[in-house]
Length: 162
Image (tube, rainbow, N blue to C red):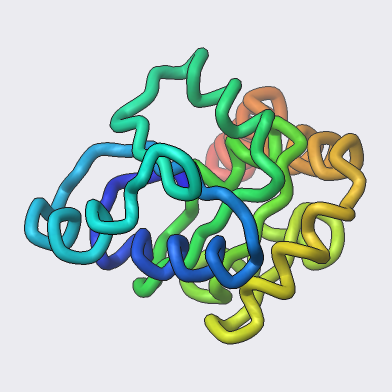
């Protein structure tokens, strides 16, 4: 799990999903809601099954994402994009996310991950770890690279300028 520790990001849900999937969970991100962290997250952090690394920089973030079986993204709000999701996919790591906000536009079902509701998330983790990591990375590169973004912006500017 990568992102701010807050109820919106579903950190406690990710702990439950990982437990049900029989997987370890690594949580990276700033604590944005201290009470939520103290009551819903910290009691589960044991340094083994659930680890909390705090905020991580780009190098460590790529290492954590690249070595993960999957990224859990059980958001509870209409997230407008999901940079952590794209970063994971760029590392070849598939995503299991709730189908909220932009997730249906970002995750390619069965290629870069799965979109599921809460009760199906643990089973989706098992399916996600079997996805082709090279295809996941290639899809993320094709869809979300800086070169793609620049080309798209230039096209918009060309259209606006007539």
